[in-house]
Each structure stands twice: as structure tokens, then as C-alpha cells.
Image (cartoon, rainbow over all chains, first blue to last red; front, side, top):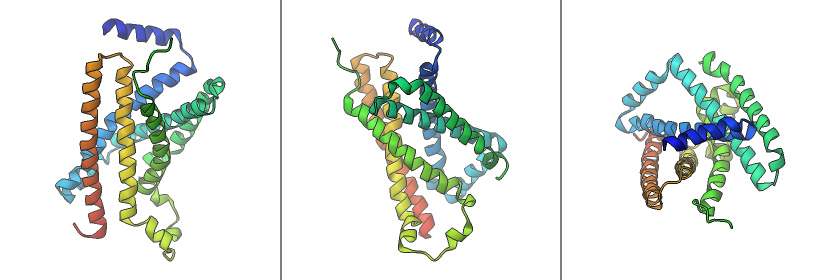
Length: 125
Length: 127
């Protein structure tokens, strides 16, 4: 396993291009979103305990730190979504020749919506 | 010679189909839950048409979120399975992993439906 891990790191550093960035980004955000889904269900299940328990946990999340974490969640969702759309489009429409430039389009969409959402997460709440 | 993939084809196709459902559904989910304050209040207080009443009914959102939850859980756990399969585990490990993920996924779906049902109960004033 240790050798395999080293091989992955080596392959990553030797193939540092848009396709590899896309692969790593999709994998990291994917794993993060699976973990978030578990946390999301755990938080919401408090509603089954009592209305007050649910309000308490929601109040605990209403801090600047959690607002920042929510914004990071949005960035992860957006990257995973736009990059995923790029993968599907490249797969289904035979556009693999454009896949590298499509990665930068997906990254630009992610950045634009993420930055555009900053006022909502940090100023308007 | 091409070798048989470790992940079946229908798995691959469903991962993409659920991805599209999630991309569309999550936009609706986020807009309704987090951005409704940004919409004009006029549109929210306009005389309710049948379509508007249907679109704002808690039952509609329970069904909507139920499908979103199913798609999300499938996409998440199938994605996790695919990531682990990339590290070439033994066939026996893969079978146990797939079985375990299905059990956790179905349990999480049941929990999610119970949560949604409670929210609908709150909305209808029955809890």
C-alpha cells in the first residue's frame, strides 16, 4: 500500500496538466461530499429527536466559521458539478480533444459562482 | 486484449444519470432552501395558481427531495466504491464492500425519508 501510494504521488507530479488536476479535484471533492452527506443526515436527524434539538444544532452552525465551511462546501459542489458535466459532455459527445480547455471553462464557472456567492455567505446573513 | 472492467457498465451509466439528476435537482434544492430571500416578495404573494400551489406544497418537496436523496446516495456510495476499486482490492473485498455500501445506503435512505416526513409534518402543522 505504501509503495502504491508513492506510485500515485509520482504519477501525479510527472503528469501535471489539466487532465490530472481535473482527476485529483474530482476525487478530493467527491470524497469530501460523501463525508458531508453523512454529516448532513446526522445534523438533520435531530428533527426526529425534537424541534428544539434541531433548532439548537442549527444555532450551533450559525457562526462565521461554519459560514466559511458552508462556502467551501459550495465551492466543492460547484467544482464537482461543473467538472462532472465536462466529463459527461466529453464522454457522450466525443469531445475528448477539447477536454483540457473544457477543464478551464469548468474552473472559470466554479470561480465565478463561488466568488459571486461570497456576499450571501458573509454579508447578507 | 481488453480485460473485463472491475466496475460493470450499468454502474458507470447510472453514475452519470444520477449526476445529471443531481446537477438539476441541487440547483432547485439550494434555491428553495437558501436563496428564497433573494426572490421578490411579490412573486411569493401573488394569487396562487394551481401550478404554484402544487410547486410550493410540502408533499411536492418531499417527493422532490426523496428522489434527490436517492440519486445523491447512489452517486455518493457508487462513487466511493469506484474510487476504492481503483486501488485494486481482492474480489472478495469488493463483494463485501458493495454489500456493505448497499446496506448503509438503504439505511441512510430510510433515515432521510423519516427526516423529510417530519419536515412535511411540521409544514402541515401535524407534528
